[in-house]
Amino acid sequence: MRISKGNLIAIPVLIVVGLLWIYPFLWTISAAFKTQGGLFSGGASLLPDQLNFDNFVRAWVNAGFSQYFVNTVIYAVASTAIELVKSALCGYVLARYDFPGRTFLHRMIIATLFIPVASIIIPQFVLVDQLGLLNTRAGVILAMSGAAGALYVLLFIGFFSGVPSDLFDAAKLDGAGFLRTFWLILPLAKPVIAVVVIFQFVSNWNEFNIPLVFTLGQPELQNLAVGMLSFRGEHSVDWTGFAAGMTISFAPMLLVFLFFQSYFVRGLAGAVKG
Amino acid sequence: MSIETVAPPKRPRRRDRAPEDGNVRERAKGFDKIWILVFLAPFLLLYLGFTLWPLVATVWYSFFDWSGFGPLDEWVGTENYVSVLNDDLFWFAVLNTVIFAVLNTAIKLPLSLFVAVLLTRKWLRGKKVFRTVFFAPLIIPVAMAGLVFTYLLNPSNGALNSLLRDLGIIEESVDVFAGRWSALIVLVLVSIWQIFGQYMIYWMAALQNVPEELYEAADIDGASAWQKLTMITLPMIRPVAVIIVLLALINAMHVFGLVVTLTGGGPGTSTYVVSYFIYQEAFGTVPFEYGYASAAALLFSVIAFIMVTSQGAFVRKANRLRKEYGV
Image (tube, rainbow over all chains, first blue to last red):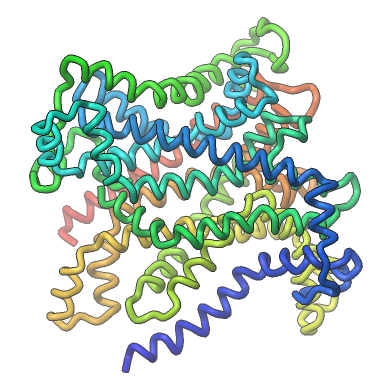
């Protein structure tokens, strides 16, 4: 049968490629348990020469990863929430209502979808500075949630303009006002919400550029991605400590992804369908 | 992200023709107007502050000799532009960025499409596991992925060299970061490894939207799997594909974190990309050159915009030609 033949060829190939693909992860996890010496002589081997948690303790306590971890959680949760709220509200209005300037705004959003965020970071820096928020958590959150979002507005517009108007008519017949109608319709957008939350949470968790620039010289405000650089000394890198820090930082994300995996593709497909 | 959303509004929308899945926008009345403003406010405020104003400000700063501190009073006119245009390193960084973006897109998109098609086959076992595997690199910060690879690829005891030595393939260790081209290629490959899952998911989403009936009809006609792929799947996902290509190019042109940790622009300045160049000018080396960096950022935006839109225009033209010839 063709079915089994396809699997016979595809699965071994996928397993080999897949193992290569996650090798850097496996290496990192195993390095997190190794001694410096074991790491240097180990080559490509994945078997740690010891099994203790020294490196994790060093990362968590001495290198300040507990602080980085807390910061990362705060940044990721807060900016994701802001991203979600602003794009859902804006997308809903743009999809449902006609008002002066609607087309213009829609076009602007599409046009700026392709603006290189990195290249306008200087004025963002100046703006945050003038708001008096430089080197504060609020400043980082604002910058992180301010820049992106055009794509998510478009996703929400796509979704909400696909909701049958019968639903809105029914809500109106029941005497639901603007806000109540929105609350009734919003749960339908779960797939889009899932996409926005996952994409934005992962990218906020890993955000490097903004925390780097907005917390220059303020290690107590840095997130995991930037704080990881503290293992890079002037002349050498504390590789095992770094590996432990990496493991601390990607473990929660792996859980999030495993948890929401099925939502993910389904949600994106629903959103693209618009 | 559908083409419907992104297409110019002038074109007749599908929902106008198919009322069952769409609706007409309401004209705002009375109290609703206030609610509309309230709903738009969060997005608009952040959009103004962090997208539109920075754009305008970048233009403004670019006419000053300014270090980022103190008053903005040293108007130099177009001097910054002239010096950027005469800065060999800037053009070199542009060249590297373009090489990187094109190579990156040309490799990752076909590969991720292939994997997406494979991982959406009904007969395949273990789809969930493999999807997770390909998605996994996305969950580590790009810059950190760069650091891991600097170790894995280092010539003295990195995994790659040790393995190749143990297998007797090479005698002497290879330092991939020593040469411009090998360093660039490493950048391209690591960045593909990192972002692959995202594009795989984009393609999967596109593939899910191909109506099942088309495949059923093709089955009845006795079409082979290959025919179904080339004659149904690929043409059906073409509109979304255009957007995916645009996103891929744009994202690739902003490569930054990976360059910082993987090559640091080196050896020397040979893997400088534009965002790294801007960062170095603006924040990396004292005295800070905000005005100069702004001019560079703006010039690059223009270059990127022209590249991307010409690519879009090229696709449109190709589509038109294809229609004219009826293929």
